[in-house]
Length: 356
Ligand code: DAH
Image (cartoon, rainbow, N blue to C red; front, side, top):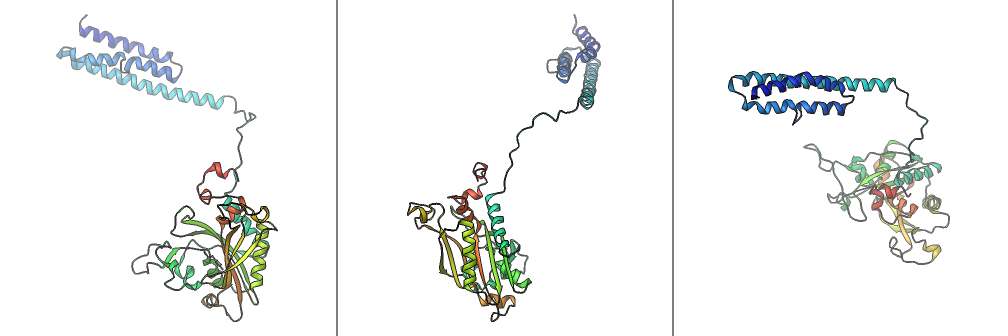
């Protein structure tokens, strides 16, 4: 048989057969398989098209056009049938039996708040129970609120570029005008500017410093509290903090006040509680890498609010006194849940978090 006759016969067969082949296909895979027999890489029509260079010149154009037209016809028929198959399938789904919702579902395990969030709520709750108001402060604040009004001298090392994240400023504005707050003591300034004594306030949130090593994260959480009125004394400070720490860590936990320095308090102090990792106060001296065998963990800074802070917020320092305290929530969480590594609190490893 001549190439031309072979070509024409092939075209004829394909044209007369393909619809029947499509009709026989009941689903998409069958339809695609049928289609492959005609226009697939080794399909009949594809093979014919490959044969074209062997056709005599005079007929090549006409036969080639017929083969291409057939190919297009098959392709558009395929697309139409795929669409109607999908349509029929959807219609069957919609008119078929309803979803059986009585089948048992997959177990959903309830999650819980992050330990830092829980500690934060627990502490705020505890202070709210003592009559403290809860306040919020922004994470981006003025240099004045973070440093100057708290009595930091202009050259204090904490105000240095090394320790503080400063915000980018428009031209003409001091490059240190606004910053990511380095502590929650900003809330003291903000609340005192806004309100008049008597007042007792707590606030918790994120603070930021430029250190990042095994024991420090550039962002961490603090809780700040303070009370101002006529006649507030160091005894009130000790009473409130001792009560708070015993509620938090147990009635028998040792609490130790040490003198320390912060620019915004005078006198200033730090408070240590017995290390709840080794519990040496009840179990006797033990090796402990968390408290480094001292038996104590530093938990907060505190003091009597410095008169200079009152002056900066417009309170009469002759009339009012107050105390303030600040602590790292990560430290509290570590002691509360017996976590020996601070990094675990910020690693977001569900295998760890699910255990708490
Ligand atoms: N702001 C201090 C810090 O971040 C902590 C602090 C110390 C807060 C003494 C206070 C305070 O309110 O009285 O290190």
